[in-house]
Length: 297
Ligand SMILES: [Zn+2]
Image (cartoon, rainbow, N blue to C red; front, side, top):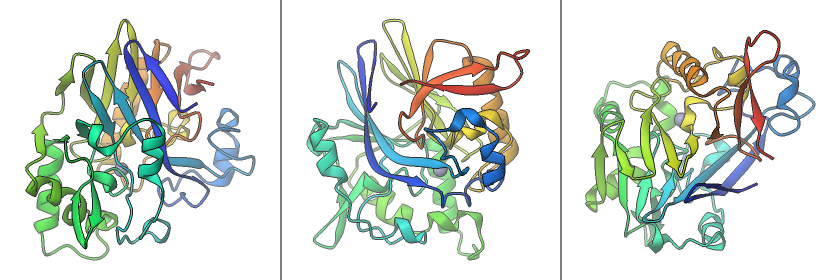
């Protein structure tokens, strides 16, 4: 399933890539053994050998008044430190067009946070220069999030071992060019984008991380961003990501998402969840201890 209807809002997933295995560096506790023990993860979110399946995709959120894209993946032509992520030449914009959206139609770009795999298609390479991919859009970024990365980037004392190394180069090729074009609005972490869409702070993964809450005609959905990287973190709330800025805070954020949304009628749409990408948070039957994601298939 690559499309969901939430009241008057249509959400469409445009995939950049799906990956099986090779992502354990992000979730070091998710060993094959440990993942194999979580039986509800197969077949959608893990293979029978305990390899995690993940996805990098954007979500187009179309409301009666907006055509908004949430998180813009890795992008083409970007030089990155992760071998599978560098210098991509993928048909993402063609796939966006096949889904019914031209780049000029998009009026709002929202990045849940400013990591390498969430901002890439903010820009594209044209005649050797990074230009905004969505020239008619306002690009919304969390003020706190922007200020953090702005400070990291200007800190010349950073070492190669810095935990933020994965993000090197991202501000220069994927954030500054849209700023320089005058397209960025820095927003608060609880900003309301339009009647049906508002931001919800989910910090920990990064200092200014937000999720996207959609509410229309009594239906609800939450786009997680990286507050939940992979559904295995619903079984093990404390399996923090090595990319988390503050692992205690990210664990607390996951616990609070369970408190608020488990057994509620709200569709949870993961930013890296493999197909079917969405589901409902449920408490487990045995005494209500622990949680799982009931996939929406
Ligand atoms: Zn991230």
